[in-house]
Length: 518
Image (cartoon, rainbow, N blue to C red; front, side):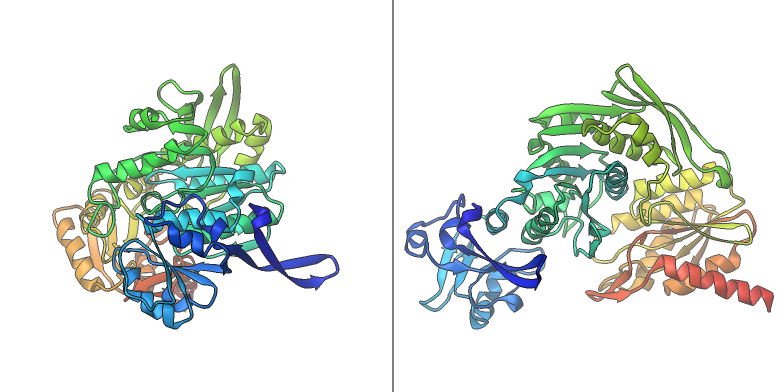
């Protein structure tokens, strides 16, 4: 396929060149796509294309506009906008009205077509790479970072694509979605491969699987962590079965599937696996096992000792992050590393240094008060987080939490009920409210907490909520900032307003210190 692409270069200096653009003929671009009528394909085979777009505002000459049907917006409504911008080649899944000089290819599913065209355009980079896909309701980000940290510490450069962003070499990019749209994803993989890196670990979300973003990715490994009801609602999955089946698609694509044998849905995932199957477990039989786990019992001694067992091999290890859920995350990452040939002794050393931004991230102490930053934003994640914090016997747990707007409202009840059971003080606040009223969201959550033991405050301004938590805290308390984790924005009316829990906490610690000293 590479010989079908013209690659345009911009000379940077005598030793390196920077790829500016690819140009591909329609003949190669539409290879493997099921067209409703292929006569037009034959007539236009030699047309040259330099980019694929699905946002009409980015349309232009020599660009194919792919009309995607979304949850809120239908790209077919914007084909004329794209035409006026200069686009003359269109891929659609239903009839559109365009001038006679427009070349319109009709397909059964535009998203599937975009995935295949994107892979064709960038010459299927994943075929020459080791791609590790990680899926599960919770833990994807942590496991992906663990895998990358272990591999890189052992001399295997590894790219990462996920919730926190894209990382490879010295490059860091933000992403709009946990699993980027197929065209961006193929472009990212091509960029990584062009940098001489042939291993990538990526979070594979149910949405990414459902919307065909990874259809043309060649996964060497697929990792299943866990499954609980989440992302079910009007704009996500219609029911749990649909959510489950979307996750399962990864294991119909992976050469080797690595399954958490202790999860309730392990048997289901194993039943759909088409490649080689491996399992990991803390409780039952597994190809890889974690045994004799022992956690520290104070906030100052957080972490878990355990034995990693594989066949006749056994290695004592220490994970600096606390909690049973993090031990499962570590076991998943170790299993992948061992599968890839990393020696156990090297895995043990690397595990001591693993990190995941915004996942049980310990913040600056304030006079004996510990701060914990975590992305927990659904029932199971918050339950695991607070149970772990409670196991270290803080004097009080002070929780700052909110729930997203324009998504399933069931999450508000679930988060509120967990907070009511495990927290001494709960401060309800904003968290990506989007187009909903954050005060109304917090009032709904407060209603679910009225019969619980937790003292409840409502402070919609999240910065003030963090300050309130620090003001109320005393020596021996634990402050938990839940929901935002690594995020550096708050979604308000469709716009990302800059905000960081980490920066806010650090800033407010200094405010409280100054106030106490004055």
